[in-house]
Figure 1: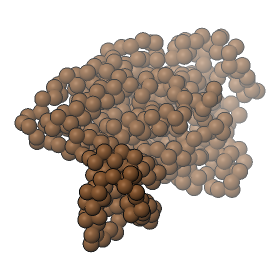
Figure 2 (figure 1 turned 30 degrees about the vertical axis):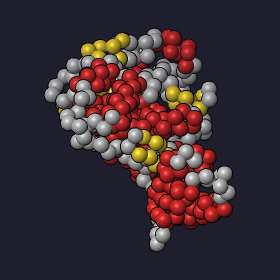
Figure 3 (figure 1 turned 135 degrees about the horizontal axis):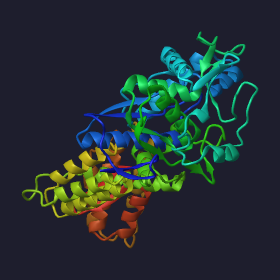
Length: 498
């Protein structure tokens, strides 16, 4: 199994340090609803974790919540909502979004505001060791005291100063020094410290939480590519300077970013599609297939057309795993081992979910072929469900509230009128008409599903009589109400489109 390590810039054999894989992923800053960019990152690392468990590893997964930050403070001031209420509201909504996307919860969700003692401990250690200095009630990390600063971004300090346009302040000794502790400002939350009241800087929060809950060396640290510099670069230098141990992280994994047009999707740019907005239109499985259909390190362009195609893919997989037909004509002839091996080979190659999905679609196609031949498909369905679960796909038919029966009554009445008023040349087979009429005698229908089954039955009789135009009218009528029909050797299957 090989993973691409941002630190080395190449694929490396995956070999965790102990029996348990220690995994940390940067979490949300809860000042607004999570968007599709967040969904991409957390779906990807959910799959990384699931696959490691599938391969027999134990995983301890920590994801932080940055519940104190400049953005939270600004939003709180704009809306007049206390910061803790704002953070709690959007943290809760984030958890709801993750549950809706079938993202398994992390083992621990530490919150920055609850980890102040550990943060102060690390900052004090860095000051004591000469890596940080207090100034004006704040504390800064002395970047030039770390000879390998820039190793994650693969850039020299001088190039970073020029490229980032780093600016100094009267307090800083160097423009590239970054803040560990911010002196309190009027009206902002603050905590006591050896340097006066203040609050932690962004970078030190993640170091404190990962070191506290996972130890001095992590196996995997994940996040978006936009976090490589300065956030993760600063995490490395402050963590290794505090513990004296290298590497802080063995494997750095970074996902590509979601774009809306030419720009990265982000809260600060305001070009957002929230997870909640997307889930109104698309199923969780469709959104996961949209994300996993590209390699995780590649950029992803948001497109409703692409997600609609992913929705159809989700329906194909769901149809294959939900189809009836198990137990017919002996044992299953499907070679499950070959599909499993192809899936593992794809995922072992730096979590190539696009190739893994291709295996699932090939498997679904084979299941459908065997079903049409009335062969045993149980083993194939069991494998498809298992491997889909590794990718976090539920393959459940979309939940729907009871369909409104009125439109289906109106459709039936329209069809009935055509039967009653049909001229001989329009419906030449009187036997078909009589069969339909006989079928309806004494029928009481009280649900949309009952009308759907009735109309499918009428259509089938019309098709047998080669009354194609009439049969097609029924199909189109149902399609207009969101019902799609699939004709198979085992009969007609209907699906409700979201």
